[in-house]
Image (cartoon, rainbow, N blue to C red; front, side, top):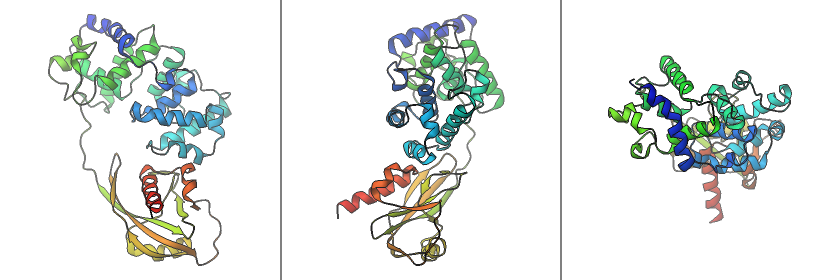
Length: 359
């Protein structure tokens, strides 16, 4: 790193001047800056771009406009509103935090940084963003966009996930955060990373702080910030059973409370199509016709790739009376919109229902 003090002192003023002219000021969560709206937006924006978040934010807020209503909502309702955004632990943590705030904080998000950052799914940077954006308190933030801006501007070569690099980035974030207009500054540096200082092909000629940027000066914008050391991503395979009865209701099963798609409703899964008849009988006491394999598809997670082969089984009928279970249920097509489903499962069922309408 080789950044002079004068450049550092001019970083925030230059960024704020750019923000006044070019920053985003009419995002849905900016129109009325209360803590609930800011918190909801910050959680949705974790690992997700603004243009994707906006319709989800507006739909979620229309359904659950207050923290108290979020806390009182069934988890299935919260997951259904979240369905399609991915990283579903964010939704479960959002719900749990709302319940904790009602039980322990008078129905409000706490104002102390330590107490706020200790809540499920929040953490230091999100807590700082909530306090800065809602109450203009001076707290440094360090989301993915900010890490990229600071790593490039200071020429910091370590991978941001490493402890030493992370510690240095926090030090720099604190150093740059001004004492006035903190809410505008935090939005400005996030906007800079999201719109100009992007990962691939950054728009350096339009950057308000380009003159002090080490990565630009030394030709390192493509290398910084350093990428996480690569590891081979494994591929897993599964067969999803689309089991439908005579009324076209589909059998869904709630996934375990931990792991991929935790607590969401999904299709039953088996290793191979040949297991389907026995699996349906033994687990669900159901028989179904056929077993038509539909077009396989791939869903990519952060740490592995899942190859999915859907198997359609029609005219399912119970062969014995079985006790009611909380982890399985039959849903009509019209009911699926209110169910928390993984995005690829929802897309698969929507496609199937669209095809049925054309028959």
